[in-house]
Image 1: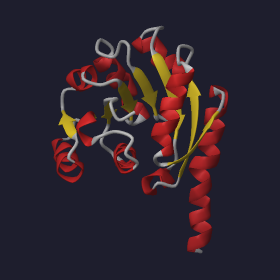
Image 2: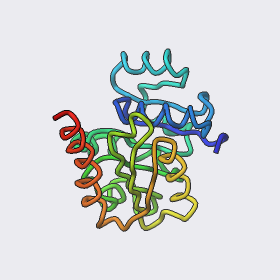
Image 3: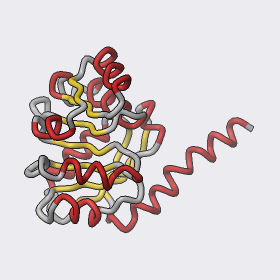
Length: 185
C-alpha cells in the first residue's frame, strides 16, 4: 500500500492514532498522507510532528487521495458528507463514526460508493485497539483487506456483519473502560 494516498478527515485523537499507526507500520509514506481538519492548530501540529500533508480544503484533500478515512464525530457527519460528496467518486471511504450506518453514508455519497464502516476502540491510541469492520454493498474484498491493513496498524481487526457493529461498540468500546475502573480501584 505504500503507493496509496490516504486522506484522514478529522485530526482528533483517533485521526492521530491512525496517522501514527499508518506511519509507524510503514503502510504509507508520510508524503502520501493528508490530514484535513478545520482547526488550524491541529493542522500545524500534524505538519510539525508527523511531517504529513495538511489541508483545510476538504475537496482538495480528497481529490488527491485514493482512500478517505472519516474520523469525525457522528454529529458532524452530515455536514462533512455534504461537503465531500462531489469529490469522493472512485475512492474507498472508511468511516469510524459511531452510529453512522453504511446506508446513511451511501445515501449521501451515492449508491455506487465503496464504503467500509469501522468501529475501533480507544486502545488504538496506543496501538492495542480492537476494530470491527463491515463492508458496504459495493465494497470489494480488496477494500475490506485494505481497511483491515490500515486498522491492523493500531491493533487487531475482525470482519463482522454491519448489524453487529453496534454490539461491538458496546462491548469493545465500553469494555476497556470498565477494565480501567477495576484496575484503578
